[in-house]
Image (cartoon, rainbow, N blue to C red; front, side, top):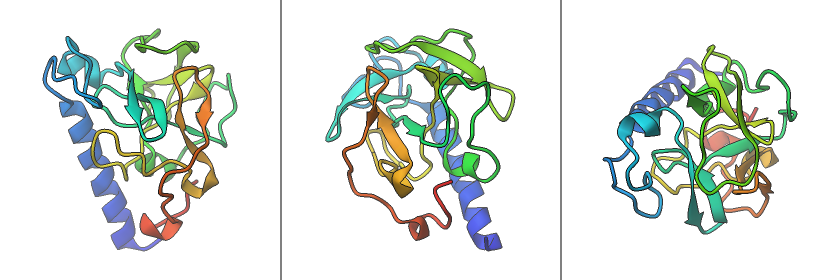
Length: 176
């Protein structure tokens, strides 16, 4: 991978982390924003909820960003399969709580120890991620990425209908 691509990926991941940490203002609500009454600190700490999108009702983080599964993960494993450069493009959904809450979700919520030592949120034993290519709340550009990344439904099922699928060259690397 070229140095300029690595720099872009690292910069994008940092920008996404900063934007996600900022979240919305308390009670901003909206179709993709944090639910009413959710503070910025709760949003940054992994407060998740559902949102209606063109893919149907999906899981989003506190900032309204789409949450994804990775097909290389295995349910109930103690570690994520997304490591190395993968984590720059697919940041883990983390929480400060051992048992985070997800509004509107019927699956089993838990955590594993993420690659950086933080608590990575799981649903039905599967680690959860966001996508650095999603720039705005409600974006689903990671959906179907390389045929291995999928938005998550409120029951914990993979949503396999495909929205615009980016090519690996669009983001400078493989989908991991």
